[in-house]
Each structure stands twice: as structure tokens, then as C-alpha cells.
Length: 365
Image (cartoon, rainbow, N blue to C red; front, side, top):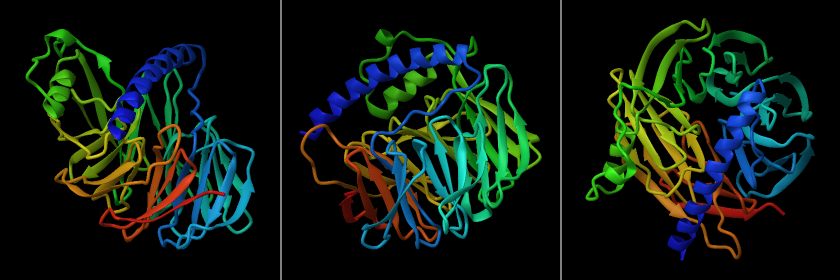
């Protein structure tokens, strides 16, 4: 059953996460920057206008598809293993992040890389204004680079302190601010309760919130001015994204969503209100261009969650395939929010309506 698959996957991922965390810690100490991990399956990108659709992954190939039929129209081998894809405003440039945290800006007419940006991990794009942020996660003090997607030019930089690790970045819709959430760190300002001492009657979100409020760790969140890099505000919160997630603005409140299906609305005072998506995990995750909602997906299932009231706006599930469970790797949404595309570990590309109904699903052949 899907429940059994989810339990198996949860056990697998918990074990894998611990191993990866230990490995990453060793790499982080020995290396100036952390590289990305190759994805099994596909992530996707659609232009704001919805007239171009691409997919890519560990096969090192940009696959061009018909946005209506999902039929493969062309393949372009680029030599780099793909972890993230994003179009600019008019679809003339495709930004591709690889496993070494390099970002390539491809001309979508010639499919040649016009510019290469080094050390731009956790690529974050605001397509409506052709803005791109990328992270050089150096141990002695990282740097967030702000670039133009048109020509790759450097617009500004944000310097981080030594050992600060970024979990997520997100632009405001007007492009004037960038939110940054750092990884949690131990602090005497929050008490630590043993796992065995968590009240047994707590379930679901209440239990997870209690655990996060009492784990002796806190995360720092900041808002910077774009493109100057000036720090506008800073706060701390009990809520942690866990090294993977996304963050968006809702006025002066930050809204963060993690891969583990939990999110939080974080006001300036840091007293976050947690929420949970309908699907079990958020392995694939994308913010709607207008910042009002997220599409996220786990083990074959997906859901649309409001970034303002945390309500579910639609959900669905893919038909089961034989062998190892299939899960989503990435999503992309058109500027009018009317078409949502997703890629999975089974090398399927799906099209979803704004109400969450599955329109079409096709394997990459």
C-alpha cells in the first residue's frame, strides 16, 4: 500500500539523511564549498508565458517538450548533471544549476551556454524581473551573489559570517528584498527536552512544533536589500527548514516550507505558526509566481498549499507504477498560475491544473 511505501521511504530517508549529514559535515570542513547532489529522475521548468517546457536531471541532457502534449521535441546534451532549471522573463534564457553549484545561462534559440556563473548553489530566480541569486557556501564566510539573468552581470553581493549555512532564499515580488533563512544552531536561549520526554498525547503538527520549540536550537532569518546587500532586518525562530526548503514574502511575514511537509509563517518577532501540507513529503517544491501558494509533491501525491492561510487548494496522486516508489523531484508554474508542471523519479513529466487536478502524465521516452 502507499502507506507502507511511505513508511519504508521515511525509514530510508531518515537513515540516508543521517549518513548524508555526517558526510556533508566532513566535506564542509575539508572543502570551501558544498556541491549539489545529482537528482534521480527529472526536474522541470516552464516559461512564464507557458510556451516552452524543459526537463533535466542526472542524464546531463536538457529535454525540450511540447507544453500541451508533453511530447519530446528535442534533446540537448550539456555535459553537466542538472539539479535545478529556471527560465527568465521572456524565455530567451534558461538557467541551469549543476552538481558543482555552477549556473549556466543557455540561449534557448541556439541552446549554447552564453554565460557561466561559478559557485551559485541554491539558485533562486525571480523570472518577472530577470533576477537570480546564488550561494557560495564557503566555510570561512559565504557569499550570496545577485545577478542579471539577461547577461549574467553581477548586481550585488551579500557577505555571510563564518560557518553560517543558508537553508533557503527568496525574493520579494517587487525584487527589492531577499529573505534568507540560515540553518539551525544550538543556543542556550532555547531549552532542550529529550525525545522521550515529549508529551505522549501530542500528535501531528502539535508534536512537531513542541519538538522544534524544545530542541535547544534556533534559526536566524534575515531580509536584505536588493541589489545593495544591505541588511534590513534580522530575527530568530524555533522553526528550522532542515537544510532544504523555500521561503517567500507575505507582506512583512516570511512563509517557509520544508521538504518534510512542514512549513511556518514567521513574523518579525520569530514566533512562528507551523502548518503541514496534505502530501507526506515535499521532495518537489515550487512557489507560484505571484507568491500566493506552493505546489509540492512527495510519493506520487502532490498538493497546492496557500502561503497566506495555509489551506489546501487542491491535491492529487499519480497512478502507481511497478517497483520502487515514485516521487516528485521538481515543479514549475506559469505566470498566470494556470498550468503547473512536475517531474518525477520515474522520468515522468506531468501537467496539473490550477485546481490541483491531474491533466496529463507522460514518461520521457
